[in-house]
Structure formats: structure tokens, C-alpha cells
Length: 575
Ligand code: ADP
Image (cartoon, rainbow, N blue to C red; front, side):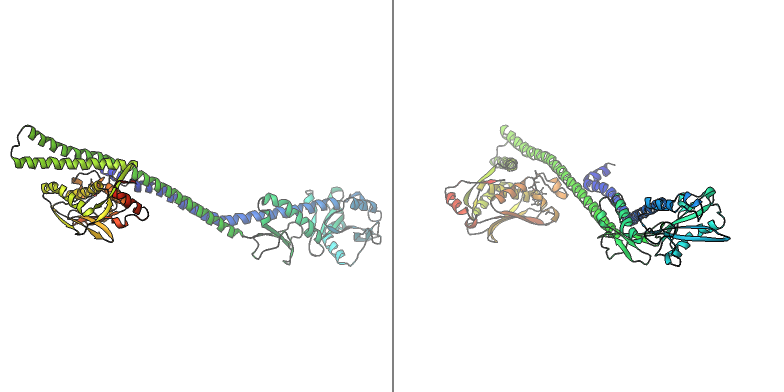
């Protein structure tokens, strides 16, 4: 259980990421599937909507024609009741004149009767301007329209001839009006004139006007329903009217090359004519594809943003956690580092106080220990102080011209006691020529001390150290090599971070603050130099400090600074 918790904590970032990723992926898949479904159904829904629109237009046209027919063809039956000889023509004319129909070309009436012993049926066309047969009516026997009118009125005339046969009692207004389209040039609506008990006593009909339908009725119906069905994009919709032969008679906009998305026939009259609709620009399918692509990319973008945000938050959190863990380690390490030399110094001090150490060699040896331990203490305290100054941005260095060769040799001499106490042998390969650079002497000594101290701490069983100083790649290079535990490749950049300590293997047993190398890096960079590390795990490491020689220390202000440097003490601020 504890192990599991530790494992979870260690891989917190991955655990959280997984906890977020799984539901996110599920949402993404569900979203994708619904988008695919939407892409499939959107064109269908679009088409259904368009079809509904066309049906509405068609039924508006139907209502219009029914209303017109109902009004114009409802000649009062009193005009017919007296029979043919005494038909009240004036009443019929008066009705037609007071109820003009918009969509008709001609009006006619039909009736049956007896002449002597002979039955007859008659169709008369209303022709206000023509020769009179009755008041304003004329026969047009044999004409195409006369034939069509006969065809359309046949049922009603038949009822008239067969003795005024009663229609079923359930006759309604809508069923009483009939349409005959056998002759497409002369489409006719008829309405019977009914006497008592629904007996047919005559018929009134109208021949329809194509032009009115295509030029007025359809355009008006198309326009009046458009805002309701396509409130935002009615300009994107093209509606067209095609006749029975497929010829286009009307369209709201120029018709595009792509096929119509929906078509519906007219109802009631002109039933072989079709209303058709298409989107201008994109078709329904293309639009659905566009919506799909847009939604999908938005979803993916949002997912990436969410993931990015989560990763950033997790990284920050894990960095903070690592830092706070390193800080805690730092406090315990430093306390240990302080306690050990202080304890040694106290013990040796007590020996001296109690007069237990008399022999000069022992005095020298113990004195050496005290000196060495105090030096380590000083170095540690210096490191901590420097670190806090560097962190607060208040660390400054005063540079002066110095021979690094001498500085290295002096530092090695000061380090001699520590080396001999720890049983190390040190080899120094130092160039013969002077290595002059602008440096802060104390800072460079501190650098070397840190590197030498690390070489001792991380040498494992090896007891050799090599220090080299000379010119390399046009710069002054000072390197410290040990043959100890080495540093894994993936750790090589991290060891220069503040508080960072390699936490595996032998290193664990060696105490340290994790500040040394971060300070070394700061100092060497403040000298416009750099530090590199070459290492092989188990075989040792070489840390190399590079300093620009005095001759090329700085480009622009180096010259003026070098003038000052002869009078030392110029300041460089390190952040
Ligand atoms: P510390 O006080 O822990 O030595 P440093 O900043 O000096 O802190 O070093 C950081 C880490 O780099 C050390 O904890 C150690 O793991 C690694 N390191 C430094 N120098 C060496 C070396 N010469 N050989 C192997 N590892 C080293």
C-alpha cells in the first residue's frame, strides 16, 4: 500500500494526465461519433425541411385556387332553376362581374334540359365582348376549349341528364370542386350548381391561366413562406418551377449546376408541375461536411488547449514539488555538513585545552585537521551566502588582472592538507606560459575549491585527481578530473541546477548542499566563461572551466575596463 502510494506520488504527473486523458478521449470519441452522425443526418434534415417548405408553398397555391374557384363558380342556384328557356342570364353575368377570378382565362356554364321530347346538354362560354347567346354567353361548338369544357363537366351534366340524380348527402365544399387536366393547355376547375336534395341542375367552370400561376401565384407563395423557413439565409435558397415537360418556368435566382436538393409536385391543379429547391453556393452535403470539419477542428483544438493547460499546470506543480523536496533535503544536508566539522573542531579543541596533546607532530596533525575542517566550514558558509546573494540579485564581483596559473597552484597548495588527510594523490599539469585573465581571485579560488571538493567526495574508491591548466580553443581552460563514480548522461545538465543532487547509487552516501555547481556556473558565467562536464559512469568525470584571456575578455568596454584594471576594482553585477 505504502509502496503504491509512493509510486503514485512519484509518477503523479502521469497519473493525473491519465486521469484526465481517459475521460477526455472518451468525450472526444463520443463527440466524433455524434459529429459523424450529424454529418450524415444534417443533409437529410435539410432536405426534409426544404421539402416541407415546398409542400407549404404548394398548399398555399391550392388554397388560393380553391378560394378563387369557390367564390367565382358559386353562381346562385336561383339563376338556373327556371330551366333553359327562362334562365336568368342577368343574374349569372352579375355574379361573374362581381366575383372576378384572377387566375382564369375563361368562364363557362353548362346545363341540361328538354326540347320537346329531346334531351340536350349545353356548354356556353361567358364572353362579355362577343356575340350574344343569352346575355353575354356564346356557343363555341367544336373548339378545343369547348371539348375540354365538355370533358370537365361530363360528370355533372350526366347527373343533370339522368333526372337530377342526387349527390351523396356527405358532399362537402372541397369535394364538390373538381379539376380536369386532360388537356394541359386548358386546365379546368368546375363546380356543380345544386338544387334541392343536392340534385345537379347545372355546372360552372373556369379555364385556368398558366401565366398567372407562374408569374404571380407561385412567386407570391414562394416569397411569403420563405422568411418562416429560411429566416437567415433566404438569399441562399433558389426555388424554381418546372412544367410537366421539365422546362423551367420560373426561379427566384439563377439556377446552379448542381442538382436540386428537393422537389415537390403542385397539389390540386397543375399536378404535373414541380416546385424545386437548391442551396446557392454550397449543397447540403458540402455544408454538412464544412460543419463537420469546423466542429471537429474546434473540438480537437479545445482538447489540445485543455491538455496543454493541464500539462503546464502539472509541470509547474511537479517542479514546485521537486524544489520543495530539494529544499527540505538541503536543510538536512547542510545541518549535517555543519555538524560534522564543528564536532571535530570541538573535540580537537578539548584535547588541546586539557593538555592531552603534547607531541609536536600530533599538535601539527590535529591543528591541520582543525584548519581543514574550518576551511570546509568556510567554504560551505561562503557557498550559502553566495547563493542567497545570487538569488537576490545582489552578488557583485570585482575583477582584476591575474595569472590563473599562479591562482591554481596557490589553491592546490591550500588544499594540500585536505588531500593528504584523505589519502588522495593529486597530479597537476599546468602550462609554462602565464595565463592572464580578468578575474575575481576569491571567486576563482572558490570555483576550484568546489570542483576539488566534489572530486574528493565523488571519487569512490579511487584516490587520484588530475588538475590541468592551459590554453584550449583560444581560451584559458582549467579542468579537474577524478576517476570516481561518474555522472549519468541524463543527469549532466541537471547537476548545475540549484539544490540538485543525483539521488541514486553511491552519491546518496555523500553529503552535500546541492549548491556548489550552481554557484560555480554562476561565477564562471559572470566571468564571461563557461563550464563543461565530460563523464563516464563508473569511470570518472572532468569538469572544465573556460575563461576568456585578458586580451579578448570583453569586446567593447574591455579596453576601458582594462585601463581601470591596472588600478583594480571594477564591478560586474551578476544576476
Ligand atoms: P553537492 O553539495 O551535492 O556536491 P554540487 O552542486 O556540488 O552539490 O553537485 C551537484 C551534484 O552533482 C552532486 O550531488 C553529485 O551528484 C554530482 N556531482 C558533482 N561533482 C561530481 C563528480 N566529480 N563526480 C560525480 N558526481 C558529481
